[in-house]
Image (tube, rainbow, N blue to C red; front, side, top):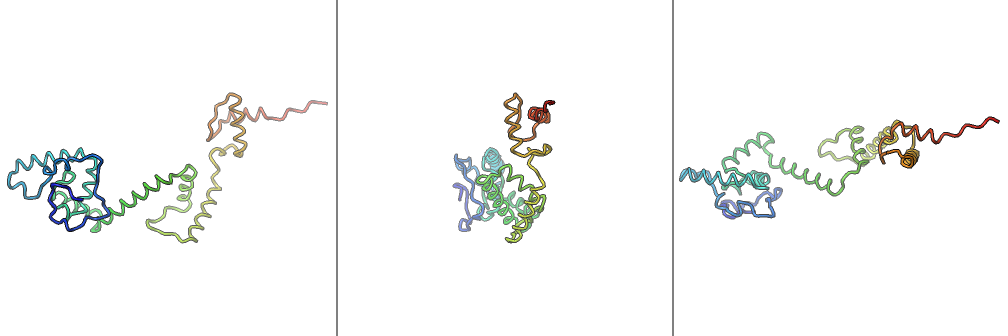
Length: 231
């Protein structure tokens, strides 16, 4: 967790486990030249010009760092472990001001708020990665929101409520015919027959979606029963 070359006056205080220290496959600038990022609030008193030049170099290196955003978050939530040093182009004094702003915006428990936000993002990313919604599933989710509305945050439904919502959802689905059948008055099987006939007769039709009226009319004309001959 520690960064070599940067003082750790309170190393006995463990960092918040909800915010893993960011890592990158290649060595970052602070790992290659840790002395460049070693800074405390009183350093300018000794040689202000030299300190400012070193800070400028450290900040420039941070702007090109691929993990600077996560590094800043880690430094902000772990105040005891980052009382000295430059993290994500910020000095200890600047991080103190940023913490005050976060407390004003998110409340005194701003660290817990950030942890909850990170957890929600991780869960959403994992759900999307492992169980991506199909087109039909996404449609059902949209209909569920239309029928039942948005769920309040952290609300747990009872089994009876889940069954009730499922019944309402299925009722709502019955009011929405599939897009391919909208406006045609034909079943899926009939539309499949139209597509097969159309392709065999030089018409271009998509596998899903609406079929052009001209194609439907041509199909109907080709399949009309022949008129009976006069006896």
